[in-house]
Image (cartoon, rainbow, N blue to C red; front, side, top):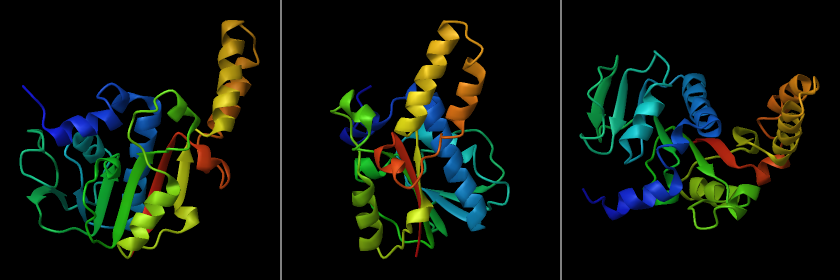
Length: 209
């Protein structure tokens, strides 16, 4: 079965296999966390990819009352504890790796999403993949009358994490006991500092109107 051009564009951003990688799962975890912190009850998932939508829904807090989707054939047959609606409006709109595909901005009290960073070191390995810069995302949010504060941006997999993680993997290969403290130290840097997030592999954000 041939995929539509929009679906093909989406798969250039994230493949089904990548969806279950640690970095992608961590980013989606942040989306669920910010939904909970926002105390919203009606959420819209702005994506055309059923697998991604399902992974986001698995991370939503139990306080959610309804989940809104772009079209009615995106939700899985699994029974959820909330109402599934189509274009019914929401308090928060989630963009799980979908801003890169040109998904339209939807007005809501909160905008929460994640994207691959164009300035990331990993972009060198995959130059053709779709991505955005932090500046582009902030510009989009402001253009749509959202406020995106600096402290509401988080970088995942910054250079410091990668460097320490690589040393930990080397220590593991050499059976050195320092492997364990190095791995622990790397995980403490999984979320980048204000400067390092500019070069992080994945960036998550929370904008508020």
